[in-house]
Length: 114
Image 1 (tube, rainbow, N blue to C red):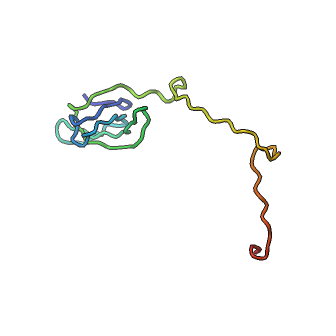
Image 2 (cartoon, rainbow, N blue to C red):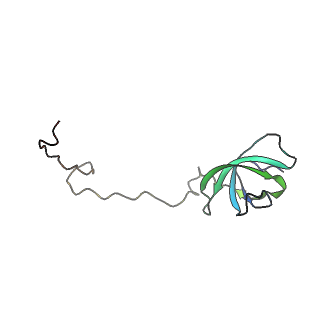
Image 3 (cartoon, rainbow, N blue to C red):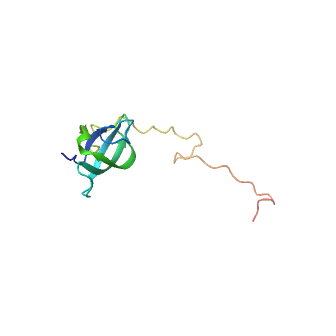
C-alpha cells in the first residue's frame, strides 16, 4: 500500500540499497510517475532523532520495503511544540529608553573625512 502525505517511514536497506544507514522520512508527496513494478518516487524530509526535518529529499524506494512508524506531530498544535522559549533581554545600562545599545561616536580626523 502506498504511503500518505504526513506519514513517517523508517527507510532501511529493504526499501533501497541507498539506506545502508536507516533514516526516518516524513512523506510530503507520492509521485504518480510510472516506474518499475513495486517501486515509487517519494518526496519528503529526512528527520533527526527529535523528529525535526533536517533535509528535503526525493527517494526511489520499493513499496514492499517501507515500514510506517506513525504520523508526524501536528506542528500547528501548541501543546505539541517544543518547550524552547525566547530568552528575555536584560535592560540596557546606557540609559537609552528603547533598550538598544548606543553606538560609539566616530571622531572626525582629516584621515576619515569625506
